Structure formats: C-alpha cells, structure tokens
Length: 145
Figure 1 (cartoon, helix red, strand yellow):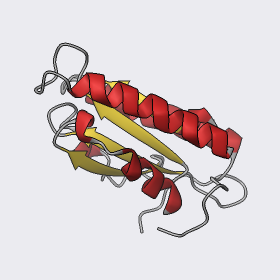
Figure 2 (cartoon, helix red, strand yellow):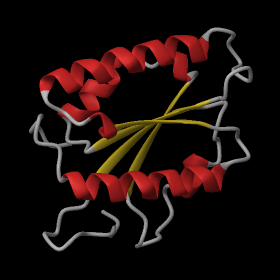
Figure 3 (cartoon, rainbow, N blue to C red):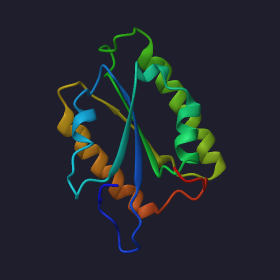
C-alpha cells in the first residue's frame, strides 16, 4: 500500500470518493499518484451522481471509510436532467440517518464540480482529511476494508 500522511497515532483517514464519470474525470488519474503527502483517497466512478444509492455510502462506512466524498456535476450541467435533484435529496436523507445513528455530518461531503476543476477536488480531499483527523476514526462501523 502507498504511504500516506499519518497522524501521531499512526492512523490515516480513509476517504472514499463516489464520483460522476462526467464530472471531474481528472480525479481518477491524480488520486492514484504516489504523492506521500496526499491522503488515502479511493475513487469509485459512477455513471451519474444521481445514481448513487445511499447503500453505497453506508457500505463505505461499514468497510472502514472515515469520510465519503460525493462529486457530481454542478446544477444545470448534469448529463441527466434530474441527476442533481435526486442525489441532493438522497444525501440529505442518508446524512440525517447517519446523524441519528451518532455519526458526524461532516463525514459526508459533496463537491459540485466541472471536469476542469481537478485541482479544486484535490484541495477538497485535503480539507476533508484535515477535518476527519480532528474527529478521529469512524467508530460507528468496525469492519475492515
């Protein structure tokens, strides 16, 4: 496994990205770089952010994710007319459910971005990693990835 930034306890936050294949296409290439200062980020491409089933997010947390990033096209730029609408409502529901179960809402992050904004996504992942380091590991679910 690649070396990633670890905090003083040796723990590295794991961030799972559920990314629209039409949105930040460059994310797939740069997240796999060998940059030792980059957080542990694993990207899963989906046909549209609107197709993200809330079970994907739950499963990511069950398998050990410390945070989930959903990245999709900005409003009005989705390849599918209602994709943004569906994902917004699903994310609201899953966030409320996870908060009810005792998880911090900051563990689910959303980034609406164009394909040309790869650097913005890189900084978003770094920001999420910093936030998660302050919260500590995901303790709601215990399975290993």
